[in-house]
Structure formats: structure tokens, C-alpha cells
Image: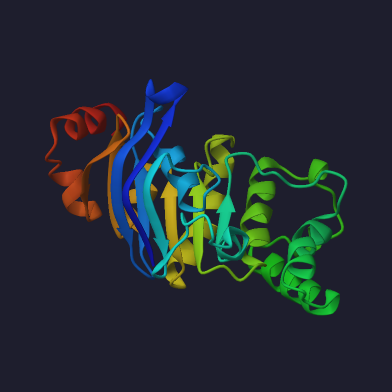
Length: 242
């Protein structure tokens, strides 16, 4: 579904190589978990997949189309890739329901009735239907992040990208967000997840990618990755976080 070919992202005229020739494939229905130390290029890689960051070099294909081609309609492709950030990015002056229906009505041209019906179904699914008329300031961090996830789902995406979705949450709230993500995975949603949650990577991931220094140093299915890491840098990282 997504193919990255030798993607580079340089800053300061090449002095900082955030991504240094990253190649990866994400198949339909996979949950690809990206882990690594801070500053390894994980979030930059994720943001390049939907061109929130423009790569310095290399190509990214979505369902066979080269979205790094300047002539590509990137907004069209972005609609197919839901993104959930570390911070929830909800509009503070809008109710939860309005936050969820704004993009579907404006961009997908859904009727207000259809958008609201879908939003309520999704809110019901994450146990927050009773908060539809609340404002973001009235919600806990975990509730806001669950709203951010279902808001992205209102656009009927084909892929969901998660950039450290639990790292800004209190430990008690992490579980409720991970539960929603696990459900999505069980439903067959294609997902790329940058996270520090090793339990999630082990339990839910189809594959784990380990990044450091702007490169993918190792990838494998979770059991082999965690039980028998091959690269010395992976072994060192896991010895500190597990």
C-alpha cells in the first residue's frame, strides 16, 4: 500500500540527516510499528509518508502512485491517510461532534446528517457518545486522544499513521488509547505506529522496524525481533527499554 524508496530528509543544508536513505514497504492490513531512540528519525519518516515533511530525496508511492511527484494531488492522498499526533490538535472552540464532522462535510462533501451519524457511531465505539456536545477542554487527555483517532476515522482512511499517540498521556490513560488502536488492528486497518510502547509492538504489530541515525537498522516480526535481535544497536536499545 505504501512504498518508501531511499527516502532522505536533510536539514541545515545536509548537516543534519534526519532520514538517510530509508526504504520500507507497508502492505494492506499490516500494523507496522516503528521504534528507536529519540532523534532517530521515526517521526520524520512518518511525516514524510503523507508529505507533511517533503523528502529531500527518494520517492514515496501510495497504492502505486508516486506522491512525491510535484504534479500529484497530495491533498487527495492525504484524505486516504488518517494521522494522529502526539498532541491531539482538536479545535478548542468547537464541540467534539463539530470537530469530527468538519472535514467530512468540507472535504468529502458528506451531508451533515450522514457525517453526524457516522461520528456518533464512532463515538459510541470508543465509549464517548455522551461527550458529543462537550468541548475539548472538558475532556481528559485519554479521551481527547480517542476523539483524535475517531476524528481521523471519519474521513474513511485506508491507512492510519500514529505519531507517538500515547507519549503525552498520563500512564493511567495510555491503556484506553491502546485498546482503541488494538481494535482497529483487529478490524484490518493498515497502520504505521511510531511508539515507545513495547508491549503494543509485541502484541499488535505485524512487523517492527528499528530506526537509529536516520536509517532502518533492523526489521522483523515481533517475536523474532524482541526475542532474537540481530543488530548490536537493537540489542543495546532493547536491553535498556525492556
